Length: 107
Image 1 (tube, one colour):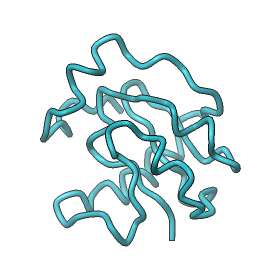
Image 2 (cartoon, helix red, strand yellow; image 1 turned 135 degrees about the horizontal axis):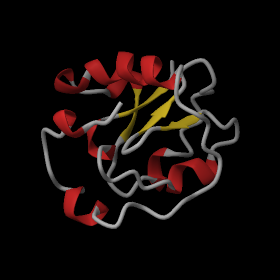
Image 3 (cartoon, rainbow, N blue to C red; image 1 turned 90 degrees about the vertical axis):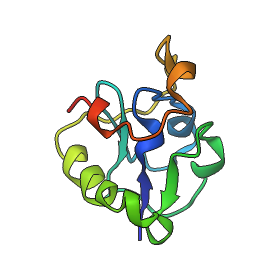
Image 4 (cartoon, rainbow, N blue to C red; image 1 turned 180 degrees about the vertical axis):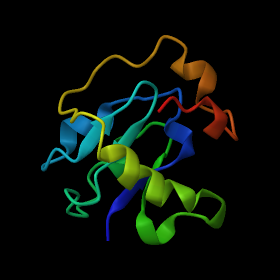
């Protein structure tokens, strides 16, 4: 099993989670983070660090977010590793409670 970054991260991209990851499994895109399923060791230390509750164990991903399991795996293949916390986008707080943001994802 692995952990999955879900839709809540889109356009928020708080990076609190990357500081605590012991195996550097996070990958960074323009406005979203992913977890590389081949690197994740299922330790769960990232989950409480996410201010928008975007990280879930794969088995707990709700049905309407299942596509994010494959999306994380696919995008992680081409995005660079991120290992240090960065400032969130200036408008992250404006997006943190917005639902249905998949159309906003920049690949």
